[in-house]
Structure formats: structure tokens, C-alpha cells
Image (cartoon, rainbow, N blue to C red; front, side, top):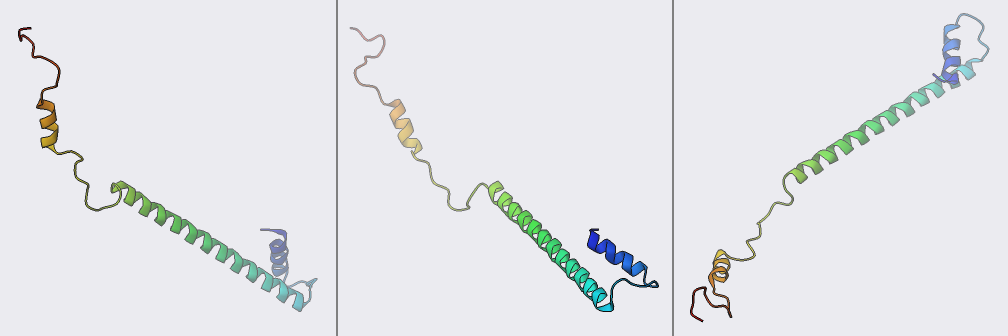
Length: 102
């Protein structure tokens, strides 16, 4: 507790004794404490909502990254199997087969 709240708590405990503050001052102190509690509650709620939003965003980003990216038609191969085998079996120019007379 800070000094303000300590002083208020002391005043409330000493309710039977002569209060150094008038009734209007006590009412103002009580209103100040209520305002501080409301501010703290809003701050805590805002922090909680912010943390929950960040967790949800990270969860959504994590699941989309684990899925392998965007879902859609996959591109086909760049070269067909026929063109790869045709170029591999074609003879090269300018070379003679081994064992040919020459």
C-alpha cells in the first residue's frame, strides 16, 4: 500500500477516536480510494485482454505456419519425365563410340 491508503486505513481503524479530518474530507478520501480501485481494475483487465489477444494471434500464426503455407493448387513439375529421359539417351555430337575403327 502507498502512503495514501495507509493513512486511510489508519483513519478507519480509529473510528471511535476523534478524527483529525472532517466528514467532507473523509468522504473525499473514500472517493479517491474507490477511484484508484477502479483505475487498477481497468488496468488489470486491459492487461489481461492484451495478453489474451497476443496469445490468440500467436496461436493462429503458429497453426498457419505449421500447415505449410497457403492452401491451394500445387504447381506441376517444371519438366516432364519424357523430356528428361529423351535428352539423357540422345547421343552427343562429335564423339565416336568406343571400339569403332579409326
